[in-house]
Every structure is written in C-alpha cells, then in structure tokens.
Image (cartoon, rainbow, N blue to C red):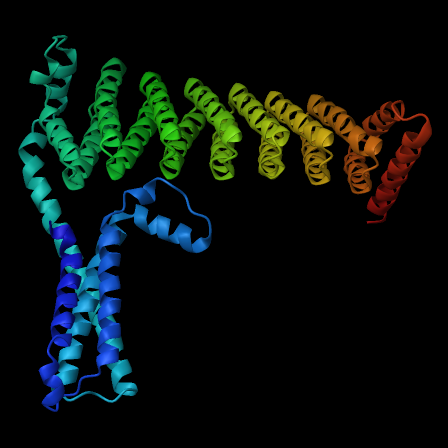
Length: 536
C-alpha cells in the first residue's frame, strides 16, 4: 500500500547503513569511517523504522486511555490517522537523508564536527519534513482520486428519486433497487478485508449524501424520516461490523456520521430519526463498555452530547429528554466503574444539553437535566468519588444562574433542589469543600432569583440553605459554619425579611447544649458578614 511507503523508505535506510557497516575494506583504503558513530546512527534508524511501523498500527490507541501528558499526547496522535501517516513519511525520509549524508561523509573523508555537521543536520530535518509531507500529500491526493473514480458511477445513481423509489417499494428485495447498495457492498468488503481507506471514504460519502437529501430535496417530512432511517441503519450496520472486525477507525467514523445525521435531522424537525440515533449510540456505548474500549466510549458520549444539545437548542423536547435519560444511565455505569474521565464527559454533556434547553426555554428539559445531574452527583458522593461531584455543583450553579436570568422559575427551582440534595449528601460525608461549594451555589442562584423577582425560587434557595447548613452546625465544621453564614448574609442584602425568618427557623433545631453554642457561633459570623457588607 502507498500508506506504508514511509516505513519502507526507513527500512531501506536501515539496509543502506548495515551495508556500509559490512564493508570493512573502506577502513584500509584511507576513507574516513567512524564505526561507533555509524553503529549508533544505524540503531537509531532502526528504532525510527519501528516507530513508523507503530504509527501505522494505530488500532489499540483508540481503545484505552493513558495517564500523564506524554501518554495522552501519544494517544491523541495515534487517533489521528492523517498525522500518523504524514509523520511516518517524514521520519522515513529523514532516515534516508541521514543515510545519504553518511555516504557523503565517507566519500569526502569525513566532515569536521561542529558548525558544518549542525548545518547539515538542520538541512536534513527541513528537507525531510518538506519532502516527506509533500509525498504524503501526493499519496492522499492519489488515494482520493482512486476512491473518487471507484465510487463515481455509483454516486450518480444516488438521487432523490432513486432513493425514494427504493424506500417506498415495500418489496422484500428492496436492495435490488437501492442506489446506495453498491456503495454499501464496497464498504462492507473493505471492512471485511481490513482495508480502511474505501470504508472511510464510503462512510463519508453516505453521510454527505444523506445530509444533502435531508436539506435540499424538498421532500415531505414522512419521506425525510424514511430516508434518514434508511441511511442510519446502513451506517450503524457498518459500525457494528467494523467493531467485530477490529476496525476501530471505521467504528469511530460510523459514530461521528450517525451523530452528524442526527444533528441535521433535528434541524429538519425529524424526531423519529433523532431518537433512533440516540438509542443506537447507547447500544454502541454498552457494547464498548463490555469490551473496555475506553476512548471510543468518549466518542459516543460526544455524539450524544452533540445530538442532545442540538435538540435542546432547536426545542425538540423528546430528543433532549431521551439524551438526558441515556446519559443518566451511562453515568450510573461509570460511577460503578469509578471512571472519573468518563463521568466528567457525561455530566459535561448533560450541562451542554441543559444550557441549550435554557436558551430555547424548555422548562421540562432543564428540570430533567437537573435531576440527572443530581443523580450522578449523589451516587458519586455515596461511593466516595466526592471530587467528581464538585464539577457537577459548578455546572448546576451555572445552569441555575442562567435559568434564573431567563426567568425560568420551574427549572431554577429544580436546580436549587438538586444542589440541596448534593449539599446534604456532602453533609452526611462531612466533606466541607462540597458543603461550601453547595452553599455558595445556592446563595448565588438565590440572589439572581431575587434580582429577577422569582419569589418561589428565592424561598426554595433559603429553605435549601437551611437544610444544608444544619450539618456543619451540628458537626462543628468551623469553615463551613462561616461559609454558611456568609451565604445567608449575601442573600439578606436583597431579601432581609425572608432571611431573618429562615434564621429563626434554623434556631429551633439548636436550642440547647453544644449545638446551641455552635449556632451562636454561626449567628455571630452572620452578623459579622452583614456588618462587613454594610461597610462596603
């Protein structure tokens, strides 16, 4: 394959250097020959050749995550086939250039080490990069031309009318008239034979044709639904076949294509394909979960996030609700697995969907997302993963402030309720950082609710502050007692009467013994914070 030229060039360089080392006659003919230096370069060239081979064997890089910046950078590079292939060309060219320099070095009876050697090395690096990348670009051009010619005659048949006739025929042998079937056959054959190029090109082609039909065909919604489902079914089948055949790049491309078609379907108000896509992505996730393919799971999460966010922004409530349910289910799996990276991606996806739902004024959707974030947060705290829940508190705070600013009282109240439950869970665990974050979030949302005259949300925020602050007062957590008092003090600047009434309610819990003293400490901190705020 053209793809392996970089590795082949490098292997050729290794043979050249080994040949030079095998000619001791040069040592007796007065020709300069530095054996230790040549051996070192030969070994390094061999290692470069191994690297070019490794770059072209990138399947496992898509499956497991690594810790540390260096390993993450390697994993990222291994997931980018274009970077890998171009780098293999550059490394191969560089190794060959160094071999030529060695020959010239001997012919000219050696060059003095220093400036000349450094200049030659820099020239070798620059020229190798230019020639190697140029060769790779030529390879990609020739490859695309080859694929374009192979698919050209089939692409011409993929027209609106031909596809419509195929999906409406109703016969048991639909594929006989299906214009995309030849492309399907090529992709299947490519996957089965382990040749990624045609399958990647074909998947991209089907994705573009599907989006083109959905956006420019002018068909009725019922027909657009059928077309979208028709293409999705094929692409999903490719992904599952590729998964069985260990063709990871084709799996990832299938996931990305399905997600892009989902976004397009949502823009055309096609609920059924959007929901079908979300379900298929969940099936991918569960399969990848059982196979422990960690990195590809993140691709699925990203796809669900994109489709769910598009649904939230477009006001397609059914799809945004379904994406929330799916992410909640995935979150429960990852809490059990104690996978903090996957959890972060999941609740970040929920945050994006919630944010878009607020923009489109979907009260029920933002309420739904707040509940799902709450579920994952509490589960994380209960299993000792308190750090993971910190980000959820931050996301809920941001969503709550945005929802209050958009006067979405129902959504704001649910966000406050979710923060209260997480704060209480932190209280049970006596995690002061979590308690403080929850109290701060509740205070900030309460203030924003007051500014936008959301009275019910203000009362909900004060009640939630009351419930959470009971834990630090009871357990004598001094930092959290002070932080709780400050949260109430900031609320009192806007809602003094309601705050004072809430403090009276809290006092009923702490009327005797040590807890009474701790409440007095809390009250002292509250008045001190009020005084400080008044001075400002």
